[in-house]
Every structure is written in structure tokens, then in C-alpha cells.
Length: 54
Image 1 (cartoon, rainbow, N blue to C red):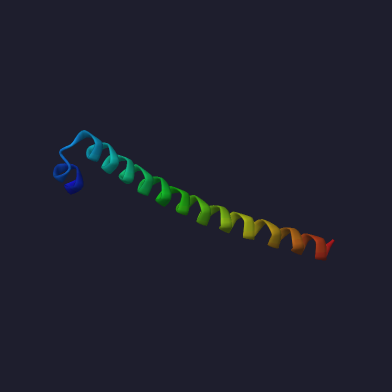
Image 2: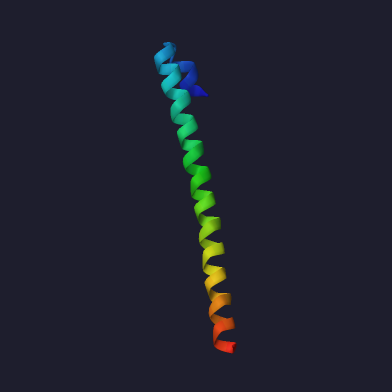
């Protein structure tokens, strides 16, 4: 919010908003990737156990 107050020009305001949105998207992607990694790791382990038992 401090960046938005300092940047008075519309172009700077737009750039600051865009930067904030990109940071939020990166954080969301990072969280999603971590969740996906956990899901991907858990599925093959169960598949391997079933194959060994079967």
C-alpha cells in the first residue's frame, strides 16, 4: 500500500498494482506446486506397494 501512495503517476500506479498481482500469483503458484508435489509423491508410493503385494 505504501508503494501506491508514493507513486502518484498513473503509469507508476499501474506498475505497482501489476507487481503486487504478480507477487500474489507467484505465491499462489508456489503453494499449488507444493500441494501437487505432495499428491504426486503419495500416489506412486501406493501404486508401488499395490504392485509389490499383487
